[in-house]
Length: 415
Image (cartoon, rainbow, N blue to C red; front, top):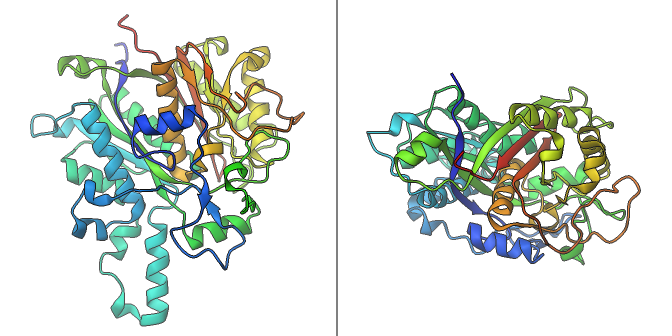
């Protein structure tokens, strides 16, 4: 029996560059950054005072105030992005289909801010003053569970926790669940809210973050020879994916087709990637094999591109390993230059950008790319978006622990 075709019918996002898909895409295509001074808390004690915060988000647009207070910010983002995606897909969930619709929302750490607040309350006021909803706010599966509860989706429900690959794995696992017949549709993606004193301080101690506090708009420079480190971001991106048969049966419009997923592990180091990029290359090759594609079929790549000395040259080597000379012909976008690094949500948002590239015929730029790096000599679409007729796009997501996850999307064609 041939495997079912899986199409994307709904998209939703809350992120530093926009509170909808359309506003996000407009800002990205025009090179507008979401990075600025930290406002969510007082960063005075920290070395890093910049981040890519979600701005203007009001959870009351998506849930009652009482419910918002019982949910961590990362779960609020997921619920909002899922609501957008479900509406975009014109998906109605009721008793007739609830058992066939599942949820997979990945995250790196879950309710980090709630965890930090809980510890602070415990140490300063004692256990009796702790929020009784603390546990359900901090657990990493709370976003995936809450999206299912709110929407009545009774199918498979999993919360991948694979560091910065989690959002891509949320989509990839959903894809696999549909292929094996365990669901007809999935609400999937990633969500994160690590812009907190604890999150910023912890990553800064690793030496991975930019400290260019006086110039936030240019602080994140993926693939540039003068890169200074990553900038923390937050937000969510959620897809509705389903079998083509299910989509056509209910009159939904396919936005694109999901055709490949690759997932490997470096098994090397808890934070550093394999220097030769072989683990990442294997994931890209796996995704291409599952999609039944040749490397020359790929029209664009949204890179992981963290603007760190460990990631950027390694990812470049991996792309060269997979694509050989064709690597130099592929427009590669490093959109963390604008969105910051949204940790467990980043792979889902960047896959969403691949869908938008297919839909619009444009690929977003890598802004702040100003100094050539001999180790990073591919076409990273420097500073200005480009018109590209995209039929097939690849999205890379790599995480601590050596997680490598790659998604491939294709323009929807009837045959």
